[in-house]
Amino acid sequence: MKRSVRIKIISMGNAETGKSCIIKRYCEKRFVHKYLATIGIDYGVTKVTVKDKDVKVNIFDMAGHPIFYEVRNEFYQDTQGAILVYDVTDRASFEALDSWLAELRNEMGNQAEADNINIVVVANKIDRKRVVDETEGRLWADSKGYQYFETSAQTGQGINDIFQALFEGVVSALENGGKKIPIQTQLGYTKDQIEAIQRLKNAKSDYDRLGLQLGATKDDVNKAYRRLAVLLHPDKSVAPGSEEAFKILVAARTTLLKKCS
Ligand code: GTP
Ligand code: MG
Picture 1 (spheres, rainbow, N blue to C red):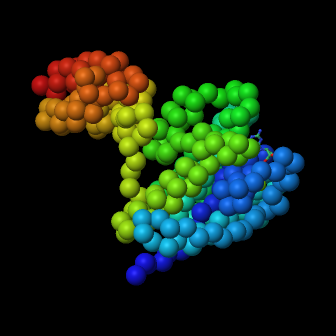
Picture 2: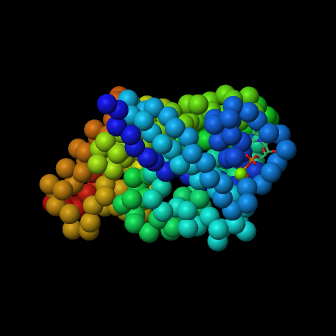
């Protein structure tokens, strides 16, 4: 007998990025050219089979316009999955992605629950002349540990992939006691690697670069060094900036070991 589950999905992203059209394309296999702004929130239900389970999906399609903040804010609770959409022809919609994450976090209240929401980043309107390129979008998504999809609600390209990945992510998390399963990013490197590289490049002190407190011992330094060296060794890591970060790491370790002795 199949087990049936119920999940809650939301859409997020600036107004006019195509959230409603993406959902309509997926659920009704059609596209509407005329822009009909979502007023506050639209709600729909669809049924799918994921990993041999019947899944009832509740979709809350949010209005992107700031004037609807007061209406949509109460619908974040209990969300398990989200499509975070930007429009590749509109840079401002890409730059707004962080503020959408911040809104989600604020409204969720429970941060552990917020961390376990499966989010997929959707670069929409790829049928048109774009101003945000694929690498930029992928890097942003990768740096957050989210899957990334290029889509057109108009042609239908990539639309099913978004929902399949999202539903599988949510169902896998449910099977894992509600804890999200980290993804292997499409570029072949992990969020941990990107964070380590950014930290090594941007930190103000050598202690900070290795993630150590002032007064760390030789042993602490060597442990931190080994952990990061495994993560970033240029022979193994394909994350951009690994080589430079590895050199910074070696130099920081040398300096700190001298200080400790
Ligand atoms: P709000 O509800 O205001 O937050 O907007 P939304 O994100 O739901 O946008 P919506 O789906 O209503 O689409 C906005 C406009 O973009 C409409 O005119 C759509 O026809 C158009 N649009 C959506 N997706 C695509 C796409 O993939 N390609 C093209 N060319 N146009 C699209
Ligand atoms: Mg809409």
